[in-house]
Amino acid sequence: MSIPGIIIASVVVAMVATILFKLFFEDKAEFWECVKYGFKPDFFSWLDKDLQRDYGKSMKLGFYILACAGSGYAAYLGVESLG
Image (cartoon, rainbow, N blue to C red; front, side, top):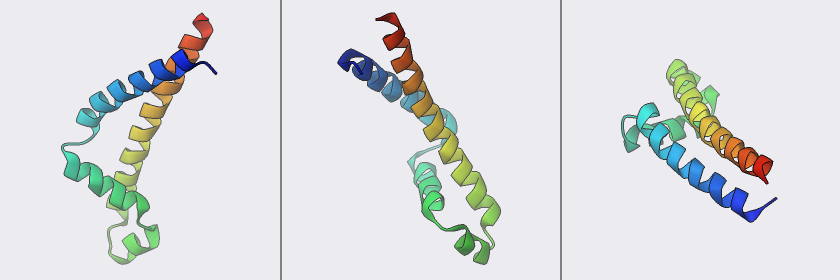
């Protein structure tokens, strides 16, 4: 584990997260709505007859987090393979 690899991966994650935020979410309100649905138990969404929206918003947030984390991991592995 090298410090330059971690720094470069962090910069890549910050850039990718900014770009993907604009692609995934219309504004901050939609992002926080996805976070709300991500933490809300599915049973309560089912009771509110809002389960399909819950699944969609939770999946959108999950893909966003996965893409950001994956880009950082790929950048870290790329830097480590050079040295």
